[in-house]
Image (cartoon, rainbow, N blue to C red):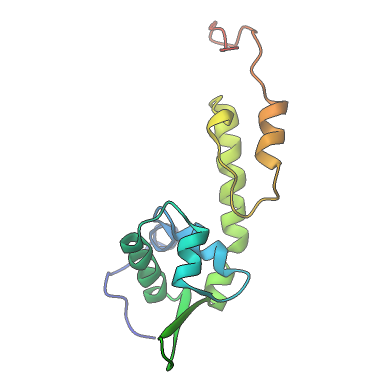
Length: 147
């Protein structure tokens, strides 16, 4: 394996965070968990990412061994992106990050601001929002929650 252009930190936790950090990396990687995708498919599946940012994030993930890029010699050219074994090993980690993010939002009373994690079953965020509706009760510091 070639050496990454950007040197990664020596501390394992910091290294892991550096490799998966990026606004769209987890979402793109999730889309590749189910099989290879073309760049145009990824653009449709991750609609708010710019083409430039998507290409940058995909290149970084390829550089760090999370995905592979396969170029087919045909006209028009075709390129498929696939998650590697190393990339697929991040699935439980990304799921755990979604779980932690939900718990954090609940603790900070920001459940209404949550979007659905791409890995969770549909309806999970909605059920959390319904079960954690703020009530007009005094909290430990004496303030009232918003209704």
